[in-house]
Amino acid sequence: MSETMRIQNSVASALRVAAGEDLFGEHRGLGISFISFKVCPQDSNGLLILENTFHGKGGPARHLHHDQDEWFYVLEGEFIFEVGPNKFRLKPGDSLLGPRKIPHVWAHVGDTNGKILITFMPAGKMEAFFHEVTKANAMPPLDPQLWRAHGMELLGPPLPV
Image 1 (cartoon, rainbow, N blue to C red):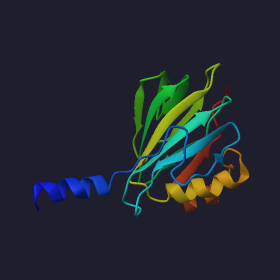
Image 2 (cartoon, rainbow, N blue to C red):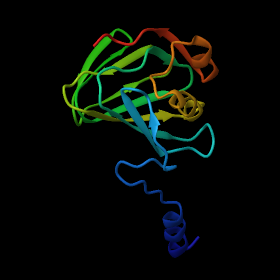
Image 3 (tube, helix red, strand yellow):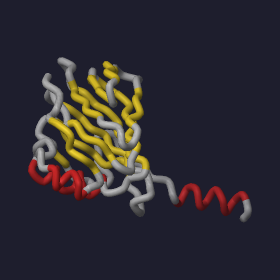
Protein backbone atom coordinates (compact mmCIF):
# COMPACT_ATOMS: atom_id res chain seq x y z
CA MET A 1 0.00 0.00 0.00
CA SER A 2 1.38 3.42 -0.92
CA GLU A 3 1.95 6.15 1.67
CA THR A 4 -0.82 8.24 0.03
CA MET A 5 -3.26 5.33 0.28
CA ARG A 6 -2.29 4.76 3.93
CA ILE A 7 -2.98 8.44 4.77
CA GLN A 8 -6.33 8.36 2.95
CA ASN A 9 -7.37 5.21 4.85
CA SER A 10 -6.28 6.78 8.13
CA VAL A 11 -8.28 9.96 7.45
CA ALA A 12 -11.32 7.97 6.33
CA SER A 13 -11.37 6.11 9.66
CA ALA A 14 -10.97 9.17 11.88
CA LEU A 15 -13.76 9.76 14.39
CA ARG A 16 -14.49 13.19 15.88
CA VAL A 17 -17.06 13.83 18.58
CA ALA A 18 -17.40 17.45 19.67
CA ALA A 19 -17.03 18.54 23.30
CA GLY A 20 -20.19 17.87 25.26
CA GLU A 21 -21.66 15.73 22.49
CA ASP A 22 -22.61 12.07 22.19
CA LEU A 23 -21.44 9.98 19.23
CA PHE A 24 -25.09 9.31 18.33
CA GLY A 25 -26.41 12.77 19.28
CA GLU A 26 -28.43 11.40 22.21
CA HIS A 27 -28.74 12.42 25.87
CA ARG A 28 -28.20 9.47 28.24
CA GLY A 29 -29.14 10.20 31.84
CA LEU A 30 -28.12 8.29 34.96
CA GLY A 31 -29.92 10.50 37.50
CA ILE A 32 -26.90 12.15 39.17
CA SER A 33 -24.94 12.14 35.92
CA PHE A 34 -25.12 11.60 32.20
CA ILE A 35 -22.92 9.71 29.82
CA SER A 36 -21.81 10.45 26.29
CA PHE A 37 -20.57 7.71 24.02
CA LYS A 38 -17.27 8.89 22.51
CA VAL A 39 -15.96 5.70 20.87
CA CYS A 40 -18.11 2.61 20.24
CA PRO A 41 -16.81 -0.67 18.90
CA GLN A 42 -17.85 -2.37 15.69
CA ASP A 43 -17.98 -5.62 17.69
CA SER A 44 -17.64 -6.78 21.29
CA ASN A 45 -13.84 -7.06 20.95
CA GLY A 46 -13.41 -3.33 20.28
CA LEU A 47 -12.87 -0.36 22.54
CA LEU A 48 -15.69 1.55 24.31
CA ILE A 49 -15.01 5.04 25.68
CA LEU A 50 -17.58 7.03 27.65
CA GLU A 51 -17.51 10.50 29.15
CA ASN A 52 -19.43 10.54 32.45
CA THR A 53 -20.45 14.02 33.68
CA PHE A 54 -21.74 14.40 37.24
CA HIS A 55 -23.98 17.14 38.64
CA GLY A 56 -24.52 15.27 41.91
CA LYS A 57 -22.58 13.07 44.28
CA GLY A 58 -22.55 9.29 44.04
CA GLY A 59 -21.73 6.47 41.68
CA PRO A 60 -22.55 2.90 40.65
CA ALA A 61 -22.89 -0.17 42.86
CA ARG A 62 -19.90 -2.37 43.72
CA HIS A 63 -19.39 -4.83 40.87
CA LEU A 64 -16.86 -6.68 38.77
CA HIS A 65 -16.47 -7.33 35.07
CA HIS A 66 -15.73 -10.87 33.98
CA ASP A 67 -14.10 -9.90 30.68
CA GLN A 68 -13.33 -6.16 30.70
CA ASP A 69 -10.58 -4.04 32.15
CA GLU A 70 -11.99 -0.62 33.06
CA TRP A 71 -9.78 2.48 32.93
CA PHE A 72 -10.78 5.82 34.48
CA TYR A 73 -9.32 9.27 33.79
CA VAL A 74 -10.54 12.23 35.84
CA LEU A 75 -11.13 15.42 33.86
CA GLU A 76 -12.94 17.50 36.53
CA GLY A 77 -13.92 17.15 40.16
CA GLU A 78 -12.95 14.63 42.80
CA PHE A 79 -13.72 10.91 42.98
CA ILE A 80 -13.12 8.09 45.42
CA PHE A 81 -12.46 4.55 44.20
CA GLU A 82 -12.10 1.14 45.74
CA VAL A 83 -10.46 -1.52 43.57
CA GLY A 84 -10.14 -4.77 45.45
CA PRO A 85 -8.89 -3.82 48.96
CA ASN A 86 -7.23 -0.60 47.74
CA LYS A 87 -8.74 2.87 48.22
CA PHE A 88 -7.92 5.91 46.08
CA ARG A 89 -8.88 9.58 45.85
CA LEU A 90 -8.55 10.88 42.29
CA LYS A 91 -8.45 14.47 41.07
CA PRO A 92 -8.11 15.96 37.56
CA GLY A 93 -5.30 14.34 35.62
CA ASP A 94 -5.31 11.15 37.72
CA SER A 95 -6.11 7.79 36.18
CA LEU A 96 -6.80 4.32 37.54
CA LEU A 97 -7.11 0.85 36.03
CA GLY A 98 -9.69 -1.55 37.41
CA PRO A 99 -8.65 -5.00 36.15
CA ARG A 100 -11.24 -7.56 35.09
CA LYS A 101 -12.46 -9.94 37.79
CA ILE A 102 -11.51 -7.49 40.58
CA PRO A 103 -14.40 -5.92 42.55
CA HIS A 104 -14.59 -2.14 42.29
CA VAL A 105 -16.83 0.78 43.17
CA TRP A 106 -16.45 4.52 42.81
CA ALA A 107 -18.27 7.79 43.43
CA HIS A 108 -18.07 11.48 42.65
CA VAL A 109 -17.51 13.25 45.98
CA GLY A 110 -16.49 16.76 44.95
CA ASP A 111 -18.45 19.93 45.68
CA THR A 112 -18.31 20.94 42.02
CA ASN A 113 -19.37 19.04 38.92
CA GLY A 114 -17.28 16.01 38.04
CA LYS A 115 -16.26 14.47 34.75
CA ILE A 116 -14.38 11.27 33.96
CA LEU A 117 -13.51 9.27 30.89
CA ILE A 118 -14.22 5.56 31.25
CA THR A 119 -12.75 3.00 28.87
CA PHE A 120 -13.78 -0.65 28.62
CA MET A 121 -11.32 -3.06 27.01
CA PRO A 122 -12.75 -5.08 25.31
CA ALA A 123 -16.22 -3.53 25.16
CA GLY A 124 -18.12 -6.78 25.61
CA LYS A 125 -21.76 -6.03 26.42
CA MET A 126 -21.10 -2.66 28.08
CA GLU A 127 -22.56 -0.53 25.27
CA ALA A 128 -25.80 -2.53 25.48
CA PHE A 129 -25.78 -2.16 29.29
CA PHE A 130 -25.62 1.63 29.07
CA HIS A 131 -28.27 1.78 26.34
CA GLU A 132 -30.54 -0.20 28.68
CA VAL A 133 -29.92 1.53 32.02
CA THR A 134 -30.04 5.11 30.73
CA LYS A 135 -33.67 4.62 29.64
CA ALA A 136 -34.74 5.22 33.26
CA ASN A 137 -32.51 8.30 33.85
CA ALA A 138 -31.30 6.73 37.12
CA MET A 139 -28.21 4.91 38.33
CA PRO A 140 -28.26 1.25 37.25
CA PRO A 141 -30.70 -0.73 39.39
CA LEU A 142 -29.50 -3.24 41.96
CA ASP A 143 -30.80 -6.14 39.85
CA PRO A 144 -28.21 -8.96 39.76
CA GLN A 145 -29.77 -10.52 36.63
CA LEU A 146 -29.40 -7.26 34.66
CA TRP A 147 -25.72 -6.98 35.58
CA ARG A 148 -25.06 -10.69 34.91
CA ALA A 149 -26.75 -10.46 31.48
CA HIS A 150 -24.11 -7.85 30.57
CA GLY A 151 -21.05 -9.77 31.79
CA MET A 152 -20.80 -8.36 35.33
CA GLU A 153 -21.53 -9.39 38.89
CA LEU A 154 -23.35 -7.03 41.24
CA LEU A 155 -21.53 -7.30 44.59
CA GLY A 156 -22.92 -4.58 46.83
CA PRO A 157 -24.36 -1.11 47.16
CA PRO A 158 -22.82 2.17 45.96
CA LEU A 159 -20.35 3.97 48.22
CA PRO A 160 -21.95 6.24 50.80
CA VAL A 161 -21.25 9.92 50.02
